[in-house]
Length: 401
Ligand SMILES: *Cc1c(COP(=O)(O)O)cnc(C)c1O
Image 1 (cartoon, rainbow, N blue to C red):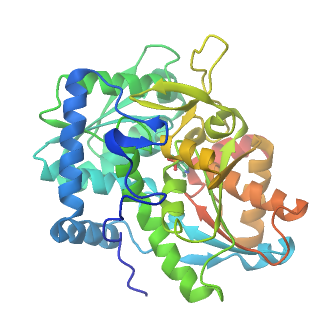
Image 2: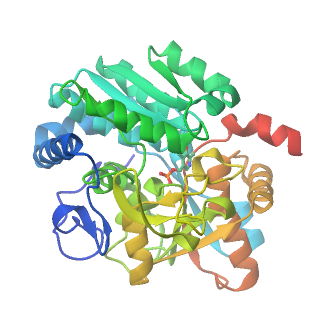
């Protein structure tokens, strides 16, 4: 096994995918749009994170957790049979093989360790389908912290198994009854709750969204995906770097972590969104959950609910750094339909023996479409992050197939 460090030394502030500019700005996006008391709490998180990432002791402790608990490094798997069918060389970065089955564990172990270092005794989290809630509950149990997870009442009904998992892990699950009773409202409620308890609790945001420093802190915790893949590509590919780097985008954390490992290369970045959750491809400028970014809105500027067969992709917006990468032309954002994603999931299962999460299947659906349509010339090398495994989606798939 290659010895790949979990994250590099702090990246200089210049160039893309380094630190954001003052006050958490990525171009015109980002910022810290929060009530006074949360602005102060975010400032404390920012300071603690900067200290921690410069501390070899913290980096070492996180590397150990990622290796011994989460099962890193994850393999880079050549998708041999599918590559032959598509006429491209496709490599899969296997986040589905981590403990708890998706990349979310990378972020929660980082933030959990940071919370403990800050003397906090509890993690607060929001969750939609329950994936980030389960990951947070897992990290809390491992680190001896409490966990309170806010979840929309409708999602609680739809995701009974994950609710049970969180409770089994010792977390408190708080039903959210406001608004549409889904992820957007759970996030608002978690932030409201944090206001009164910032001294004892850390708010563990699940993607590259929210007020500064969350978008870049979460990206830095997910950078391990891109850094490992970079080393693996160097060993595997003749050119050392793939022609394309592809990942699915909900809030955008697995994509941001993957892209970050290749920011200084000529690799082309493609973020794949769900047709019904296309914040980067179709969103408009707005402010939600503490940050300025691109969100799906109606004509009155009201945020509209995202919708996708993949619960992890129905966030109605996208992280501010993705909005900026889009403006710069550094990354392209494309959409695929539910049907294309389901087709891609079945195809991966039957050619490679891997049942992907429906989120990850979106990224693959674009690869399949692009290879057929000329966006990916024959012989191109493609690195795709397989963000999670499909066990959670079998009941959805069972009704369709
Ligand atoms: C949550 C989730 C996503 C979407 O989140 P990002 O922050 O965009 O990475 C994608 N894939 C899986 C498996 C997830 O659980």
